[in-house]
Amino acid sequence: MLEINNLQATVADKPILKGLSLTINAGEIHAIMGPNGAGKSTLGYTLGGRPGYEVTGGSATFNGQDLFELAPHERAAAGLFLGFQYPVEIPGVSFVQFLRESANAQRKSRGEAPLSGGEFLKLAREKAGLLRMDMDMLKRPVNVGFSGGEKKRAEMVQMGILDPKLAILDETDSGLDIDALRVCGEGINAIMRKSDKAVLLITHYQRLLDYVKPDFVHVLAAGRIVKSGGADLALRLEEEGYEAVVQETAA
Amino acid sequence: MTLELTLPTRKDEDFRYSDIEALRSVWPIVTEEIEVAADAEGALEIVETGAGAVARHVAITLGKGAKFDLRVLTAGPAYGRIAVDVKLGEDADFTLGAAQLATGSETLEVVTQVTHAGLNATSAQIIRTVLAGASVGTYLGRIAVERGADGTDAEQSVRAMLLERTATANARPELEIYADDVKAAHGCAVGELDAQGLFYLMSRGLTPPQAKRLMLQAFIAEAFTGAPGEETLSEAALARLEAIL
Image 1: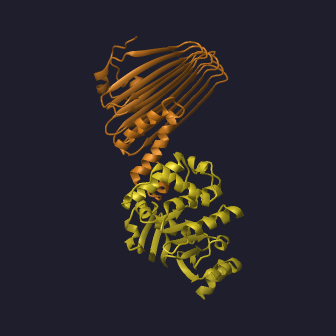
Image 2: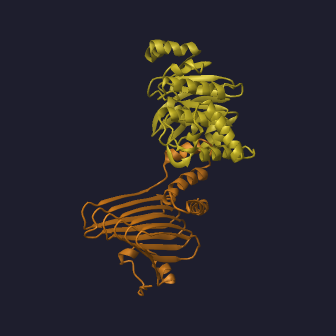
Image 3: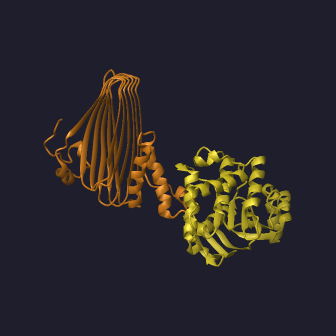
């Protein structure tokens, strides 16, 4: 589904990703872990197409398409969803309006008929229910006045509504209390654990992985994947720390 | 009805950024007088969406405890000038919400003179300007608090959004205060659309024009919040916005 080959990227002319390769197939859940400054969030933003994140080498192919040829909204329409670590507040625009327009913009570019107001609300209510979010919250301006945890749950509701093929979730677990972590984890499973979908979780900690069990865990350090393994690798990292595991690889 | 007969020049402070040639075509301006009696309420919508030059001057006098709600939408004219003079008596309340949308070589301006003449009167002005192309948008806003008008509460919130670097926004808030215990808050900002916000919206599938429209729609809506004709004003603004983007 996603094939990243020798990806190099800079932010403000500073090289951050230095030859990252990763293949994600349909039906798989991958977790990328790593210390601060390793380039985890840069990977998410580069794949999402955020301005200021410059690809200087390598490639990313998403379902046969060159990802870097597509503008951010085209990547979304192709089935890519980026869950933000810090969801942006947009005063004056309601979630309902924003998400209905987004969903219909994606549908239009895929040649599908738009959702009517009623159809959209039914879908939104169902997905909000999955994340135990009150529908009234979606009538409010986008993320304005939401707590950290509510913003992350709202990200997952958006993912449910937009129904992507691949979700890249950047530190969805940060700022969540224990209950919200479980709700988000169950939401990810319900929405994305399917044979035709895939997830890339970007995280610091193992705790989200208790709820969303990854098929593969990768360690990112200094802009490259230095180690890959199964779900047990995350447990080892938690126990021994990044430094020990990364050094063992270098030795 | 009063008439000013001599065409002003740009040396006249109130016409400093005007399109004088366009102004000539609609000169002289007939002042529209509105008086609101003590404890009465009034409202007016000024909606100018035609393409021709337009210049209006409204003078409003508010009696003791009177209230007035004025909303302005200028979106379309090659030259659009809306000048408003308001005189507030004791305990009077004045609200202005104005939005100007321009593109090409259009020149739009809102010029206000709000005079607090009595005790404890309140005024609130919200001005939102969206400028594309090489258009010019101006807000000149003078608040005068006369001697003895203690307890005045006067607010101005002025924001302009430049969609292209070739557009120009002018904003000049002025305060003249001769009374005590006065609250006069004014905020003024000229900026561009938040790039973070745009990326967030586009990452969900909105095209760049859709993302911009959504953010600008919210920006303009602030000028019409709570207006009796909020919905129709917003719709008219949106129609122009789509033409501009």
